[in-house]
Length: 319
Image 1 (cartoon, rainbow, N blue to C red):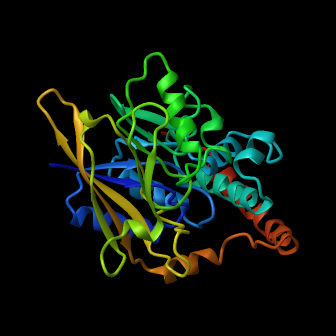
Image 2 (tube, helix red, strand yellow):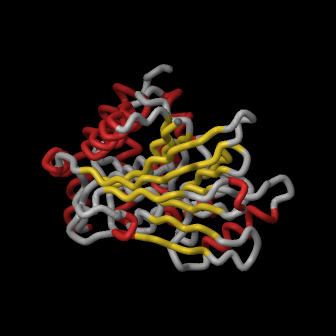
């Protein structure tokens, strides 16, 4: 049986990613999907990139923070409207600038070019989609798929809008499965109907974890021939927001059945929450720009000359 580890919203939290990848290996996962946002918020995005590269994800998508970072790396102005749409707060854009500098000095140019060209969604196999936000535009590089209006939230209409969008594309087939990130909340939704009204039944937040410690939840899934659409969010690896006071990393495992024709059908989804070394994260966070604007500007006045020197030294990276 194939086991797919689905990860989303790592956000520069390298210790959390380390713990999740080790847990996925213990659970014999042999395929990895990453739904986007390796950048934003956290201090160690380049470390996370190298960790993910080591497991060769089949899916690697562009998130909204990734969009801003890679546009800045390409030379865009921080005040560009598209960057404001993806990262609306000044604190988010300061971190995006800092992460873009880390890319410049920490990655070969060819690797960075690949990150800059990633899609926001992909059809992994017929009827099976992976996306960062809602699939709202047939163009997988359209920014509206990952902007502030693309959060797939349980019991909210964006999921129905997404299903309508996929259905109306001439070449799209019935969507059996859609994995999304962006919202940081683990959730499982099953559309009872293949056409409107979809009647999506949701399980979300801590409710997806059905064991006593709220660290694992296993759910049986409809088969592909039942004409129901499965929507999942694995939760956030690096910045979970769904249970106050619980900072454990979150991800999900898909158990896959594959028939002789190669058609994929899922038997179970397992939601996991993992402890990690938060002290390592807090230590690295000491290097980040402060959130308060009056202090952040002073931080940049100090760090800018250092970054400029590093970039001049390291910008000659070759593939």
